[in-house]
Amino acid sequence: MNNFISALKGEPHDHIPVWFMRQAGRYMSEYQELRKLYNIREMCMNPEITEKITYAPVKLLGVDAAIIFADIILPLEAMGYKIDFNSLGPKIENGYRYNRNMKGIHEFDPAELKYRTYDSIRLFRQNHPGTPIIGFSGGIITVLSYIISGMSDNNLLYTKQVMLNDNYFATMKKMIKNMIIDYVRIQINAGVDAIQIFDSWLGALSPYTFEKYLKNDVIELVEEIKSRVPLIYFSTGTTGMLDQFNDIKPDILSIDWRTKLGDARKILNQDIGLQGNLDPYLVQYSSDYAMEETHSILSGTRGLDNYIFNLGHGVLPDTNPEILKSITDFVHSFI
Image (cartoon, rainbow, N blue to C red):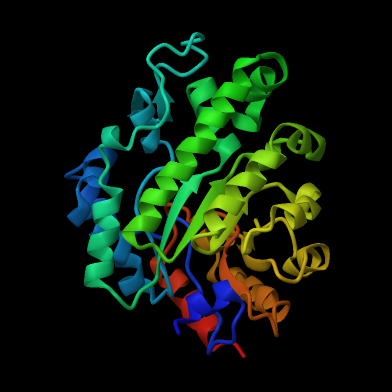
């Protein structure tokens, strides 16, 4: 069995598997050349382009799994949201901040999904049957922050205001949870081996707020997905709520770079695997420090069958792929 699949299941395997969040991205010359010809929308609408970008880092770096190339907010267009990409990031023109009565917004409709994620995954499965492929979605609060604020909402400042004071929050939360489940099902039906939830803004909530307003929804989401395929849950800044993941029970919890994996292991139940967690800034700026920290991380994971090496967040745009390749080789050879 593939080492990545074995680690997801907590079964013995030959070497520590490794892949990198945002591994199909801007640091690759192949991606940069395609971006000269196509915008994000055009790339995600074309299964041949998406499949090519998805496989490129497997070929370039020798990683153990691919992750489908997409964007976490694109499925929102199948709910009536109007998205514009600019130099400052995506903007949702009819987000709740600008559209308080939610005019034109509806439950996720797969028939309105312009992005052929299903076809891209099937094409990847056909062309690369021996390479595991990961599907993904944004997490509930992370996606909610975009539709509520209409843009990136640093520290969830506007999102929290709506959460605490607006009855519409419960409606929006339910709609986004349903969207994530439906969008993930599309990917599962297309043949992904696992799903990763990217909840990058979760750590902006206090543990108390998370428990009161969101935890039960996350539990329901995780239970629904992992009943069908293994689930990896990624968040940042959530060291103070690690214990709550014992109730959420993802198959693998992906840890950001701010926490030692050994400390996380002491808090989490043994049946919850770990993924992570090299500081992506070290990878961008210093090969020596990146390799040194990689060794430190791996030394703390000896004997764990349910461990996958990764970064503590996504690959940064100016990262040298040769450093990522060296890290991959080192992880594979680690004993």
